Length: 127
Image (tube, rainbow, N blue to C red; front, top):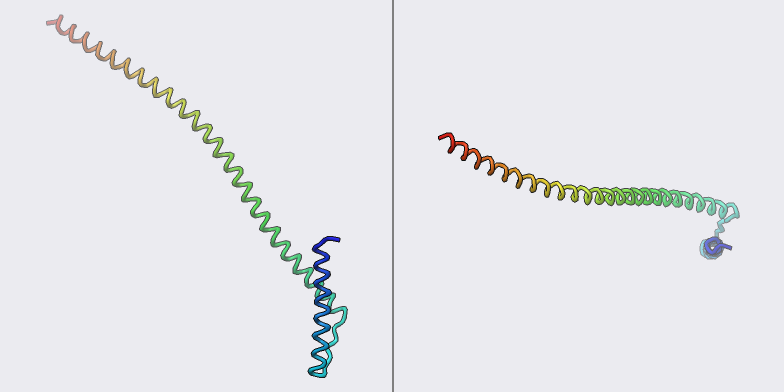
């Protein structure tokens, strides 16, 4: 037998005994007797079942909410890792293009200085 079911059945038996003892004390003190029928305990069990189902449904909803949040976090983590990989690739490309730009700028400056020298030579020859 499931330990939870055993604990539940023991609790109901204890409640039954408590109500019986309480009823005996009430009868001694007030000379009245309240009849507690098996139907009353069945109603108690039914109420307990409804309460249990309601709480279980609430817990399931919370669990689903948490699981969907965890799935969302996992997918976001995957996207971040993919973006980091892309960033590394772009950084390499940027570094290569920056080096190429520096080389091109050096060449342009060198050509510019050659052009200036030649234009000075040409202007000197023209005079």
